[in-house]
Length: 115
Image (cartoon, rainbow, N blue to C red):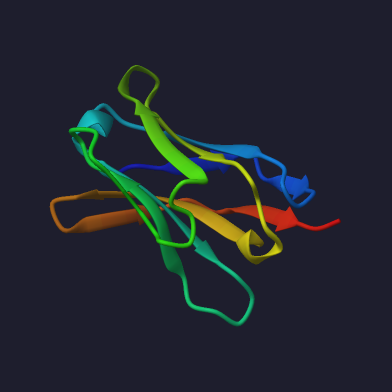
């Protein structure tokens, strides 16, 4: 089992940037596919970005070109660089880890984009 702890959320003005971090426990981090999801009030949780164990990435259409997911296996961490933020990006952001049909979730970090 892996534990995930997100950090880096906060309040930012439209057009600003934030970098989310997710620290994972355990020695198998390099084998996990990692992802960032978000959930706004009254909406379903949606995939934002994913990165495979080999480094392949995928993005939701709504964030492609603005957000970048990356991982550092030496630090057991995955990151989400968010640029050109919009009010529609306001949500709780969750880190996920997937391996062998098991999915693990962090507790989430709030991102609020508002002037």
